[in-house]
Amino acid sequence: MDLKEVLSNNLRRIRNETGRTQEDMAHLLGISTRYLGSIERSKVSPSVTLLGQIADALGVSPNELLTPPGTQKRKRC
Image (cartoon, rainbow, N blue to C red; front, side, top):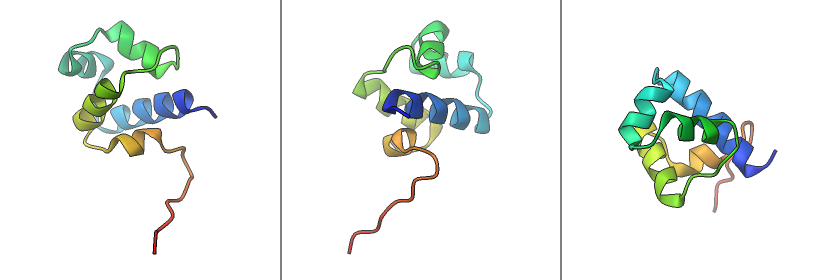
């Protein structure tokens, strides 16, 4: 799974878990619903700035949006 797919899947999942619609998220982020939908369908990649704004709006870190499901974080000693 490529990074764009990971982002789109995590974004959609977390957005749904938080009860936000695409319209709500797009309005909050100042982007079109169509553009947000394109991100969620892996058609486009958001800028780093927008990625940070999406993470903030969802209450997660950008890293959480970019981490493939089922991957465990390794602790550094």
